[in-house]
Structure formats: C-alpha cells, structure tokens
Amino acid sequence: MIEKILNKIDEYECICLYRHVNPDYDAFGSQFGMYDLIQNTFENKEVYFAGDFSSDLVAKYQFNGEINEPNFEKPTLGIVLDTANQERIDGDISLCKEIIKIDHHIVVDSYGNLNLEDSTASSCSQIVALFLKNKRVKLS
Image (cartoon, rainbow, N blue to C red):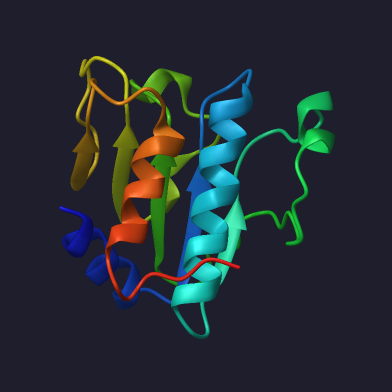
C-alpha cells in the first residue's frame, strides 16, 4: 500500500494534508512528518495544510516549512492523517480530486480512495515512519 500511495502522490502537483479537529501531538506530528517526506522525496510539489494551527502544541515542533492554506485551483490530492471518521476532519476534503486516508484507529469509516489503516500501530506517526523503509523516500 505504501508504494501505491507514493505513486499517487507522484501523480499530483498539489497536495493538501489534513488531520483531525482538536489536534494532539500525533495529529500534528504525522501531518508535519508527511509534509517533510513529500517535500524531500518529490520534486516540484505544492504542499498545503488544512486545519486550525492556533494550538499551543504547534510551537513544540521544530517545523521548517510554511503552513500554507490550501489552494484548490489545480487538481489536488488530499491526504488525511490520524482521523478515523470524516466528521472529525479539520477541513473540507470535498475540494480534493482524490483522498488518501492514513490512520491507526479502529476502522469505522474507510473514506479514502486509498486507505492505509492499521489499528495495531501505536500512532499515525508510526505508520508515516514506515514509509522510510521504501528506498525512494527521503527526510530532511
């Protein structure tokens, strides 16, 4: 499934990263980790963030990117991290052409076109880290 997700990311110029409302460390960590993975593995990708970033937790991360609001002028791939069901997504995924769901919660809503769901994982960040096993993936 990781290879399928990487291939799907490769198809899009614009990608928007989502996570759940009232974010915790895993929500931000998986969102920032996926951003870094995409920016360092793929050339010429526009990566945007959906959701509220006013939480004090954001300051706990040493994040070097810019938190840009989504721009849906081009076909956009949405990647939703750490969110079991659609109702808890912080942002409007209906603006995306396709959706990838990456999550570690008990599966209650497989809403993505591609779903990487592993309820045995301790966190969504752990699942994102599994992408590093793929030789084409790079991190800063």
